[in-house]
Image (cartoon, rainbow, N blue to C red):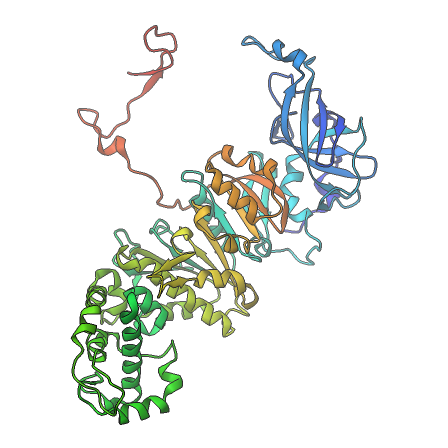
Length: 597
């Protein structure tokens, strides 16, 4: 389907007399005051299938300036002090009402091709006419803000609509949505999960490559040949087609093990690192080992020191392989008396005592169900092979279910960080250069900006932060979904070129969004607490003019519903059935309440 020209889109013109609002009565550097001639009407009006408030807060307007059109949004409506008393409980509307409005200036519209740019090239004059912007025009803003038009029908994602009218559908190119990374933010119940599901559905209609880190398993109902489900651990609810996978210790770095085992003090950290180096040497020269261990008690140092010199680079490589199962025993073997001569002496019981708490943590971690997908021995495929399958396929969604990973030992955060680093490593090697891929991280606040361990040996889980900072140039983009923007570092949010923001009621969350996106100010963020469920503001580098749309309902609903109290708490004959209720406004004892029938 070809893209229509501007003349075809608006054959009768953009400024319709049916949508006239009023004239400019005051002008400042940021706002325009308007005399709203239709604000006193009892209701809005309908035009071309859509409803227009004709002077309601949040409505987009076009100002017919002397040199160009200006795009704005009504931020305030009020009456003069002398007329405030005319508004009483019995007020039914009046066309003579002298209402005033404040319009926030957003950008300018070229008169020839209707291209929209942020900023104001020429301010209006007093008396300039102001019209409600047609919904179709607002829906086309993503296209009208582009500098270049494609020579062919572009790939677009149909996300939502400005109004219930069919012609107000908003479609966005994936380059503009994901090209500079994307974040989906919103308080619980605002529609964040539905938006994520809608974006996934739109992407898989094309040859998209998506990797979804599903923290809670709420996207398990997605079906189709283009979707590959896999899970780590034992999810409480899993897709019947989901494949159990392993994330073997070979995927982990030394810093990951430090995060797992949390050494502390002046003894535990050095002994842990020394044990890891010794076990790496076992892999390189097995002849030095005794049952997989380097025994140091009363042993000569010569052969050990010579081997360490030969393999210094590999032994000190944080990616070097070793058998983590022998780590507790090797730590004990590192606790020996050493006086600097040619031989180690006997065991150092004091150092073993200092390491006792760490040994307990290591043994607990190695046997914990939370890390079963890491340390267990089975024939299940490695997760990395599934990622390779996605890379080599024409287009799929790989959903990685982490709902089976327990919260103990920081397992979820560490495992998710390892997955993110594996993706970044593949990106740096060029795996995604000709296969652009988007990794979507649900409940991202649980995985970003986390520090684990003591002050001396703190490990920073920063894999997804690095993807946000450098993944774009390698063809790997990130899409974060979170209900707590304040728990995501501002450095990461500032890398998000596009923000899809649902209702945010917490002031700190809104402040973080304001600071992260330089294009939004307090006037625009003031609308965020009052967005309806499923309604979102699209903001960002490629969307310098904030666009509010109602996200289309996804075909496959995410499993994000709360507990069904009416089903499971109901008692008596009507158990599990919600009874019909009727309003009884006239009841003298219970005004405004409801009564069962």
